Length: 129
Image (cartoon, rainbow, N blue to C red; front, side, top):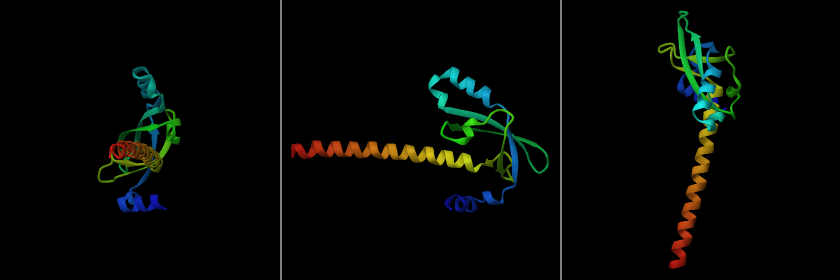
């Protein structure tokens, strides 16, 4: 599959796998909602995990309500892979797929808008010709 190819290409398949725990999902979501009610569709979560030397590392991610990661609550765990040379860098396939889907939808929406704009300009130009 393409995702496995991407992971091999980037070297993620060689990174050690570990369990990361959500430590502040609800607090961040509440803060986002208070700031802007339209952000109900966005989830920002903090993770904590330990490297091969049992040192704690922290990371954060933002995801939309279309992702399975959106439903995670404080105390729940997910599997991640981290870079042994820089343990603060991590990779999670579900997060990658969620962002890939979001970016694909955005690219399609922009393409449709640009196509409609070009079509409209073309119609205006050809009527005056």
